[in-house]
Image (cartoon, rainbow, N blue to C red):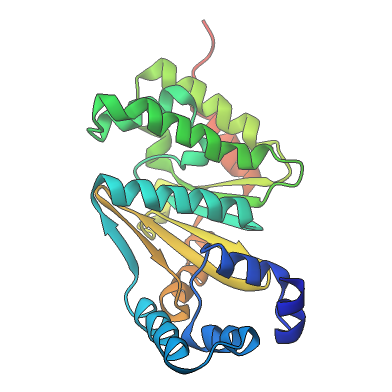
Length: 248
């Protein structure tokens, strides 16, 4: 990888993510790689054709198998990201959820009982990214409605709010509440940034997940107006603390 990166003047992380399938390669990038690998003729044409076709639609898979693949890929992206921005409306971002809140959310989403423990374990593994020695910068835009919604009941929600306040004390975590007075704002999404590489957006729906890679699809999320509508981190934490009921 070092030799290839040097010949193409690319970063080693770019080569690594392409080689391991963590991000797609454009037809132009595949062509450059094949020149270094000395692949020619029909095999070269076939591989460039695959790359060109793969870049046309967004990556969309439906059903349980597709979702499992999507979430595994998302976890790998999170491990590789330098900055993660999560914007959520109906619930709290997965990386911030307590086990009880996560369980209640899965039950509310009609996830089959036999799948819940595996989903919870997957979420616990993903949350470890924030516990690393050098975690990615994590910015979460939280809709005020999600802070009021009693997911799992008042006790579960109180613990969840305390957990948010504790996480907000970490240098790498910024919580930004979008108050009711801000009006509407963009739908749920996760923006992942990778230093010199292109960012990726993940849209999580009930029965499918979509990764957006093309600049034209990603740019609107980079230029989102939600930052201007959200409270600053200090005011956000004060609002969250105000919603925590006193301990009896």
